Image (tube, rainbow, N blue to C red):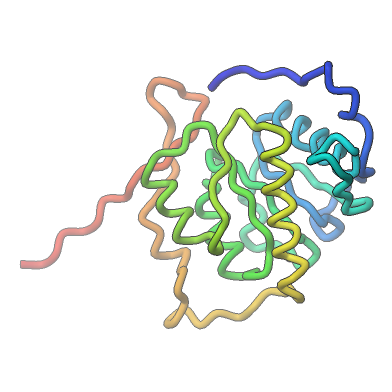
Length: 209
């Protein structure tokens, strides 16, 4: 993965929408699930530029937003996320992958806006995300470009606002179109880069003769 640095030449990185960092999931409107601290900080700085006149030639403000940044989404699988409007999810995460998180969020909160990001997603992972995400949404590649990131974030934000209530829905396991139990993917570790989590396809049991 290429290293990156904040663009100190941009005079608007500290202007625009106010960001309020929160400590509890129940207070969050935006979740950033990213295990790289600098990448998480960069996305928050990009979000602050919403409302600055240099974004798209006009102001695009969503007002003050409450953001919670966490390094792993494992604890979110059973958490109450009724207040979350948008989840920005890194696909390669420790403990549980972003693909499984997005599968769970789509299953429980179909009105939540989702923005998956990754610099090393495989083609099978991209296909899985394409099946899970609402039409018109896609994986955003790293390194992130500010305007592309913000345009995709605003799309997810608008989707959430237009979907009305995003409260959790009860799903009948027998008719669940996206059952998390049936995932064919599991988390592994890259042999060449031990610090990187990767997706591994599970071996299916052989059919009885």
